[in-house]
Image (cartoon, rainbow, N blue to C red; front, side, top):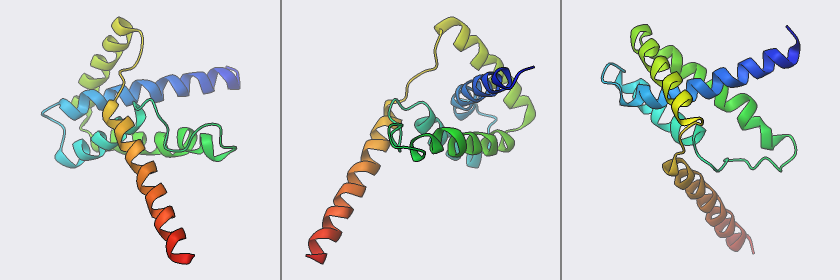
Length: 130
């Protein structure tokens, strides 16, 4: 298998696992701490807006390449195996039927809120320094 095929398979597993967490968040068998982390990860992963825009060199892809897969990996480890398998089947079915991953407007609002808060904080810091 070539390195490009390995990367392509890894990326498709990450996408599927993000949708799996979307199902796990709603599953009654998921522990509360895994649900809390899943809510954050799903909101961010399925958000149409990135926290760090991709046009920023190196940093723009850092969240997509390291932060998000790490959070997904951690969250997957917190979910019981039986629940995880059921949610993966649901995610696979969803992606085959819909042809795409769902979108999270909550995640977009969360990212915008972080950017606005950072802008206001930077503005307040700049005003106090002047």
